[in-house]
Amino acid sequence: MVAPAGNIPNVGRSRSKAEKQFDTGFIWLTRIFAWGIAAILLLIALPIAQQALPALQKFGLGFLFTSAWDPPNENYGAFPMIYGTIVSSLIALLIAVPLGLGTAIFLSEDFLPPGVRRILTFLVELLAAIPSVVYGLWGIFVLIPFLRPIQMFFYNTLGWIPFFSTPPAGPGMFPAGVILAIMTLPIITVIARDSLASLPPDLRQASIGLGATRWITIFQILIPAAFSGIVGGVMLGLGRAMGETMAATMIIGNSNRVNISLFAPGNTIASLMANQFPEASGLQVSALMYAGIVLFLLTLLVNVLAQLIVSRVQSKYQ
Image (cartoon, one colour):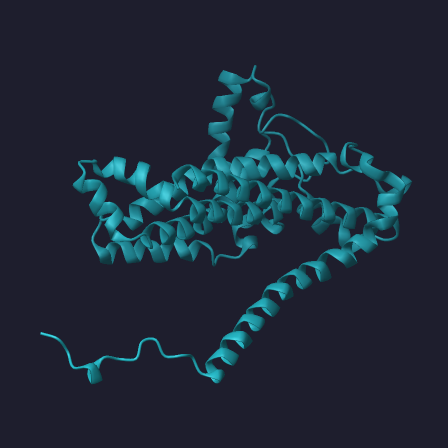
């Protein structure tokens, strides 16, 4: 049966002038927002770089590879803090990424009734709302005593390995990495869960229809499809770990020395700035700003590497 010609909608009608103007305005508005983000970054980076200029002129790139931090003699080097920032963040990722991804899979698939999954999701998100100073206090009074027997076991049995070569004395790099892992866990878990849950159901149904098992579907279909979102969550978590101040300051030990042992005290750039900025003056302020620029560039480098990884994986599966 053919419909009358008069009942066929005019799908090919030309758009009105007002609609075109609205679209053009929307495009320009989003363009302004995008450039606004870049402007905010410049407004943050340029004043810090300007204040860091005296230290940059005096110490140059040697600031990145020397260990002295001597305010009375105005001799500064940030290598121990750079090392501590990277190592503590890597420890956090080694713990948080497998745990967060596993939790995301558990909460996005039908392993539990929907009501229980909603409760567990809420509890994971609640971890992100706890203030960092509370994490720091919990780390001092609960986490460090809990980890001490574990650290002593590794020291007594594997003390010949440089990573476990010093006896645990309380605050140190490993407890700081664990507390940072707990703090980054909700970010990684929630974003990975949302990425997996937003995938079209056709992917699961098609994979299972072709004879794949549930675990093959998860690890070979769903995770690659949600890889960009998962990596985004990991990078946000890494940024949180690298920039965390209060909890790391309370747990890491604040030692401006490089020690390869994970049980020895260390320091991070954020902890250094939190400890010394209130009493800093003159060239010390410039050195702290220089350290802040280094942290800014480390975060930028991590995000660039993450984008390269995502692009390579996406090109592999396209």
